[in-house]
Amino acid sequence: MTVEDGPRTDAAHAMKKTTTTVALALVALQAACSTTGTEIGVEDSGGYKTMVSQREASNAKIKKDARSIPKIMQDFDRAIDKYFGAVSKLPDTRAKTLRDTLERILRQEARRNFYLLLSMADNQKQPADRGIALIAIGFADATEEVLEKRTGTKAFHVTIKQKRVIVEANKKYTRMALDTMITALNDEDDKIVENALLGLGILGHEGTPVREIGTLLENDKKPLSLRRNASWALTVIQPKLTPLTRRAIRPILQRLLLEPLGAVDPTIACPTLRSLGLFRNKADAKIVEPYCEHPEALVRVRAAIALGMIMNQDSFPILLGLIKPSETNLNVRLVARKSLKALAGGKDRGYDVKEWQKLFKRK
Image (cartoon, rainbow, N blue to C red):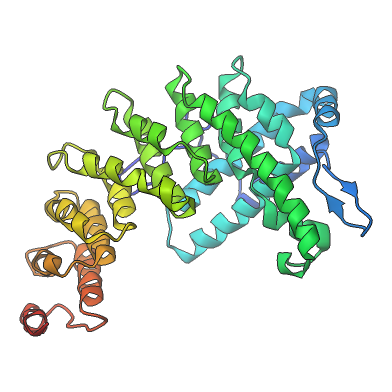
């Protein structure tokens, strides 16, 4: 993959190329999953199903339909690869629509086949399927999808009691998924660890062990693909963490970006710059600014965006340099201009360097 791509999935130890259309892939996934899927719930007095554990019934169903399991895992694999393919093309509108569609269906089917996936995620005898399952159980947080399915309407139309029951059950599912993925982080097979990192990023659980992920990220003896997934995971889960847990990420990012320019691979530097920018701490500007001179244009783009989020007025000269004609990449110039606009409180001077200088001199 190039630096512009998203995280590496390696769902079955290698990225699969498929010519199957998205529509067929989704139909196949839903059809295959329905053969082993178990509805997990009982009717309450109000006629609504509340989510409860039926592990024994689910396991019996899995054993009965064991022959269909390879097909189910294959269809999950295809859908996951297409999902990350769409993620890598964001913010393209079509890619966003495809990602949202795939995510909704993956969440529904991950919940439907939760115990099958949980079992496969612990199955060390089948590493390929285990890798797929570790990503798939990341989609186990299906609160909104379950609410909509149970009521035939949007989540906010259910009663407080009904929502509380489903949310509490959802916490149990996501906790089991989290524990399984945390265990996989210590696996000897780096490919398994890579996929566990993707699952953790998708799940976005507040109990995610960010320090352990940071250790993997900073370990330069680990494969690049593993470290790239660790960087991506820390970035996407950051907004979902409690303030205390979130603070533990910042020193990890700082240490990594303080390495000599060029020492950090661009595919790691890009999400790390974004993640540090999300803290919006003005002191971090000095860490980010050197990356505006990185030889890779996409890294310069991410650095300029991060400076726009940090909003440190002292970064004005650095951003100004990125809109000058000497910067040959149009995307770099564009995002630098937008970041200058953010620093100027919404005022825009286009690519006129002198006008920007006058504006900030008055400020």
